[in-house]
Length: 105
Image 1 (cartoon, helix red, strand yellow):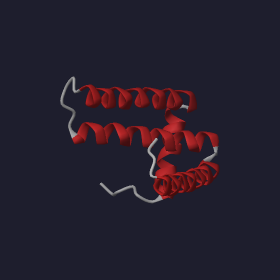
Image 2: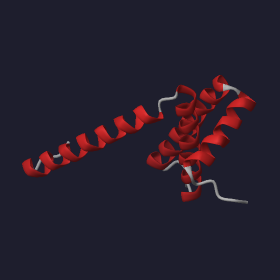
Image 3: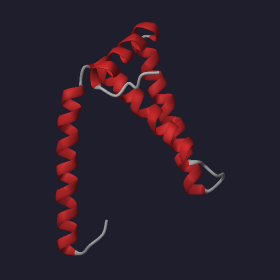
């Protein structure tokens, strides 16, 4: 099977999924996948059960795929990328200031 790594190939795949299942269903799936990732993370923190790297990786990938579909639905991919960069700069600035002050959050 050919790898789907470039943006256009993924976008076409997401559009097909949206045609098949609809936007509401895919938003619901995002919510479900985020819940599953939350559960895995809570299990790791509480050590209720062993969670494999594969399980965690699968849940993270599921959430990322569904997030990308929601960006297609809402046509906000570009705005999200701008927000992402702005928030990374804010984090970098915060960490630099924190390092200078020697304090922790």
